[in-house]
Length: 400
Image (tube, rainbow, N blue to C red):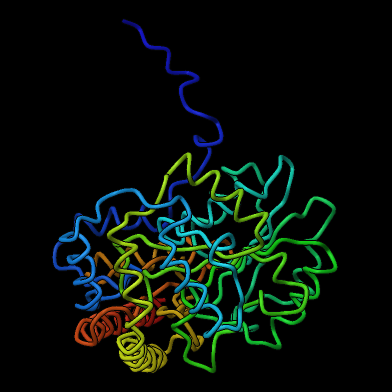
């Protein structure tokens, strides 16, 4: 039987580029002995009492569907967490939905608010999923470039330049993946004012909110006029070392959250009940473990930044998340060339900055969610790599 393949794939999907991260890690999978500093995943195992809560739920027969919204008791704890940590008040009955990771929440938010022709502003460098999700929702992504000179913060003047009559929403990701940048209260005030003046909806991905090393995290939803126009997204993957559990949540105005739940009920139905029970335990009794992990991340952060600067690499000091984003422009190599050569010659995996947008070119992303032992080995190998590059440059100069 002949199969006509010409129109089998949607042009929208066909034209999506593959993830720059996934593309690079296909190379890693085929290389033995690699130390990976590329994956944004804690090296800690989910704390025992959280895993035990899952085991207990299974023993008690919790294997059924939950409400589309998520377990009521979990939503109550999320509401309590958001209020006590960030001063955000949300009704757990109809302003909070439990999702399959923060990633699903981003997708739901975009598909709920976007109409054909809308534009979504996305500061770069940024997490790789935002632009594709915006495109799949029918929006046109509009990027705003941030820079080392501005500590990778979104500036009011840069945001203003991108706004027009078609602008519907702004996606914020602070603490930021991949740069580790944060937006403090004084940084967010101007952004909030612009959002109100231009009637923008803000999708605020705060998955790294608990991993902040300078002061306390501030949510843009806490500013005057912002609660009613902000969708706050968070989850358990990073701070509680629960990446594989896939439990996230969204909180926001009732009219938006109710419509997000409508899509969620048709596509996902509900997040796994065992994961929800574990997340409930994490919120009730997991703060001490989070503090311990943050303390270790902070030690690794200082160590990695110090070592990179010793190598002669210009390196912005991250103040959140668990990434550093050093510049490799001094090598004369593109970020992809640098990452591929480092992998090939020293078996160290990092992510090319170009994977995170145009302004990420000339940088690499290093995750310090690896053990101090592996960080030390990997950075020593990177130093050897840079030394060999410098030696080759000197040799070429001497030859000429």
